[in-house]
Amino acid sequence: MREISKEVWTLAEVRGGDIHPVSKELLAWGRELADSMCVPLASILIGHGISDKAAALIPVGADKVYIADDPAFENFLCDAQVKVLEDLVDKYSPSVLIASATTRGRTLMPMLSAKLGCGLTADCTELSIEPSTGRLIQTRPAIGGNVMADIKTRGQDPQMCTVRPKSKRPLCPDMSRNGQLVSIEVRADRIGSALEFLGFRAESAFGLPIQEAEIIVAGGKGMRSSKNFSKLEELAVLMGGTVGASRMAVDLGWAPYSAQVGLSGKSVTPRLYLAFGISGAVQHIAGMSGAETVIAVNHDPEAPIFKVADLSIQGDSMEILDGMINSLRKRQKNI
Image (cartoon, rainbow, N blue to C red; front, top):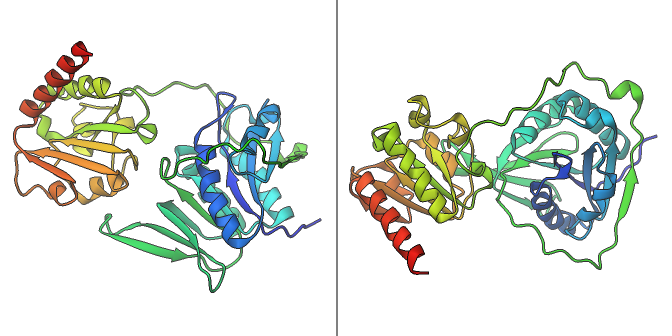
């Protein structure tokens, strides 16, 4: 039986049996939209052994949590989760569905969008409600990051989008909030998957995943060699950050793909982005345009990255990198 709810939904992520922090970021986005629309905010939680953890989403914004807890969801099999979401949407008819632009969100949401026949806007940096229509306005970079496009989805609900991780801070927990936990009975004929989970192997990376880092020390072809590139990791460790790379640096084998920033890599939103020897191709700039502060070091005074940097340093990347490392080491010894 179809129940018209018109709720705003966020899609929580479960990794290693725990609710991933990005789930709470999504609730901060959803809370703003739900309040603007005067409707409830719900989070969808799919996994195995997670029922007792669902209540943690109530203090950070959720009015309701729909829980699909089944051994079939112990590992992420996209098509199985899409079936569950398709059934939930068909039953409850939410107005808006938001997911994070993580690997999982980017895999699951297009498949669900195709199944439902709904529009989908990816990699949004801002979301708001149009007062005159009550429709969702989705803002995202376009034309290589040179402009910001406002997009309004036509057709049937839910209005679907993904938002970049780290684009909003989670709400401060309010332990006085009350919410509803709704256990979803998953039909046996809807949990099968055409995929087989073979195992999980963590990809080699420098420190934290770049989409979760507050500080990114990135390098490009201007680092000149893999030996020089490895010094970026030294600076990143001293600063409590992680290492990013341009596509050229990855293609040269100096860094793994997991560190690549740009349209063909990851979109990042750190508080501080340091770019050493990166010229600033539009594809790279589009991937780091969400950074709060950008410091660029390049020997070329005409490097395009200087146009988007908050602080531009013209000079030899290695000389400046070594100077920063030495200064931070001395500072730490004096503390």
